[in-house]
Image (cartoon, rainbow, N blue to C red):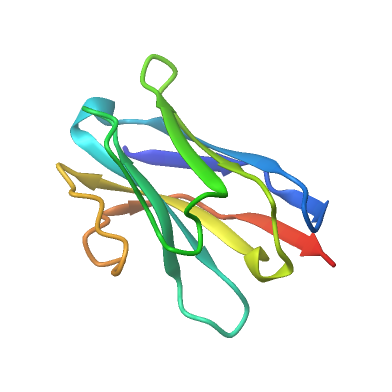
Length: 125
């Protein structure tokens, strides 16, 4: 059974940092693209960043470039999202998702077969 467990969210002031973790189990980790999406109240879920665990190729949404860094520890089966210079508009529930042999498509959630429960990130001004 595929399981994705997101953690690391919390309350932080604008300009602060957080590191989210996505711990994976139940599948061959190296075969997947693992992405972070977020969803703010009243808004659609949007892609933030993605990493292909096989070659560690990364993709970022424009909103994340220069502020967020995605990485993977394949031995630990965990993907991290380091978020810096956080803004109030980054407030959302953050989800990690897995796509078998994926190409890190962020504009759509449709290719991601498996999702974890989200972790809340709140950035105060």
